[in-house]
Image (tube, rainbow, N blue to C red):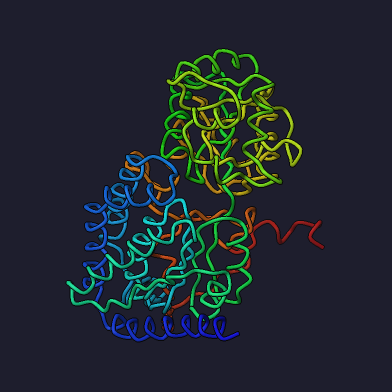
Length: 466
């Protein structure tokens, strides 16, 4: 009784500290918050290797160099996107409509931190939060608690050196479900990065929330594609932090006539094609009681195979399994958080789109998909007819969705999945989502009301209307 009450009182204390610090930040100018954000970003660039070592030692997940690359690229990319952004005071003017938009803080943000990218969620979240003059409190995943606390404390020390209130960034140091729930209730906005349970809790907290849906990226490869390039792109996504990212390719839907050629290119690119017996063993170890096995995911392919009870050559870096079914009875049709890609065949392009939509209706609704094709009409048809928030064209989806220098997607760590994935937005979550806005409307003196003919056109004489 006493410990629970004390724990929850501790959350109240954190929120009070954050609110006091945010009141000071409320007075900052646009250039002041931009400089603080830039300081966090440059700090992250230089701390990337240290953070990668630390998170790997704590979780034993993923690949260190991938983590370093991701931190440095995202820090630089976020700065690309915010270096001219307006979030303070007048941020937009429409002279024709006599409208002015003003940016204002949200207040205190509760950041739910996953075990996969705790360092990124902390520093990127704080860069976005400070751009809106907000404070942020982190609720760590228990398996990445030490890393989360380390990154938070190091950024707090940075704030101290900058003369910025340290309590603009705080952390729940002994995380629990009760504490996280209480934090979400007391804060002004929740940004939830993690599994479906965490996101559902965020949306159920009664506080405005940005959540993310499950990742289960499916890519289509048609007969016009460069097969070698497609295979290498998928390989790149797989080996990038050992498929820890929600945007990593999980399945490839391949035109049946070219299926054999594409699979051969994948094998040349380091893939190992499992036979039926190996597929069964792999399934038995990847899932336990219907859930992904945390002891196996985000590991090298050789280790996954060893734990499953079969051997693969040392130079094989990702695994392939063939599938035709979709749904709970066919778990390989879902998200795997592993260097495992599920292969499907299709005949017509309409069939390919149907397969993608059915796979993602089971797992990964609204998140992302990709296509390897040189037929622009097909690419547009695919984008129009798939129920997805993002379509990556001839790129590794896992290395392009959240922003990269070779495309124009906004850099982020949070990917909305729209109503398909149960999210409020289908956008990449950026600094724009960390501000409130006030509209100032002035009277248009010389306005002209358009005629009905101008507004409704020939609908007015359509007898079917009445």
